[in-house]
Image (cartoon, rainbow, N blue to C red; front, side):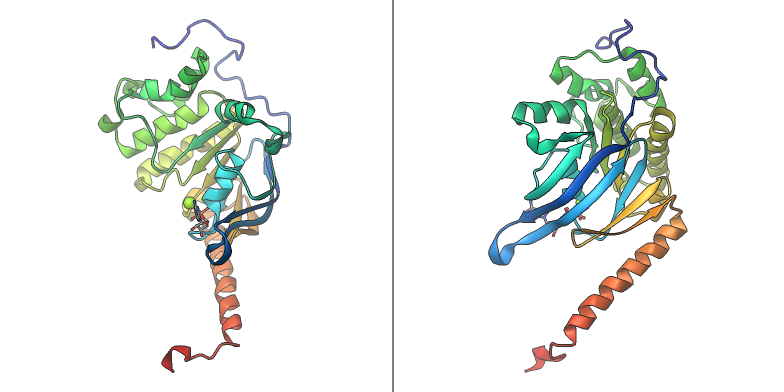
Amino acid sequence: MSHVSSEPTIAGGAAAPLDHTRDVAARTIGLSKVYGRGQSEVRALDEVSLDILAGEFTAVMGPSGSGKSTLMHCLAALDTATSGTVEIGTTDLSSLNDKALTELRRDRVGFVFQAYNLVPTLTAQENILLPLSIAGRKPDAAWFDTVVDTVGLRDRLGHRPNEMSGGQQQRVACARALVSRPSIVFADEPTGNLDSTSGAEVLGFLRRTVTEFGQTVVMVTHDPVAASFTDRVVFLADGRVVDELSTPTAESVLERMAAIQTRSMAAPAHLNKSVPAQQSER
Ligand code: ADP
Ligand code: MG
């Protein structure tokens, strides 16, 4: 625990809930992201307007290529949009210079990647504390302990990533995202590489950070069971928000996914009516 100050810090007690006084933790207004130009143009996001409520666990679902990762990266200030607005709290990201953006990424946003993205040569504890070390900040010892105990990593702190299971590595990545007490945590398919038991542990842990600490979490997932851990599901298709669901269950999510798929299959069929059906046989 050499990196961790044992003195009480400003942030205070271990179980003190995060202070979320705002209703909206993050917001996009008319957010569009276009990759490429001309014939190769891809509209990854198409006028997305979305409010993420503070203290809620939100899932983002949608087919592969529907823009989920692009949305997360734009929200977390890891990427910039082509047009439209992103706000974290009441801060419009376009108003920030590079230095302020770096600080926002470091202090106000946490990100969990599908592939963990841990530094292989560092121990679990060093990985968790890395963002704070880089920033030259001392962690809040009580909060560090709370996070470590919540993710169940107490006896793994001295292990390197290759000495840990995928589930343990992802829990290290979650702890790393939380240790600076960000106002919002984004997780892009955090259980995508995990077996169902490890996945359920990570999901249970993310759920607890929302319920017990008031953390705001936004998670991309393909899995209706994973989505059932959340408070709200937002469905994307072709870069647009096409539906949403409150207090989801695995069944209600599956139903909604099926309905969206039926609609999207109906659309091209309708368009194809104007095209000769056997075009390739000329
Ligand atoms: P999802 O996470 O839902 O699978 P993405 O946000 O990764 O979707 O991608 C949305 C669309 O944008 C896809 O068509 C994808 O091919 C395209 N795309 C994503 N990143 C890039 C990039 N760097 N350059 C060009 N196209 C991209
Ligand atoms: Mg993705």
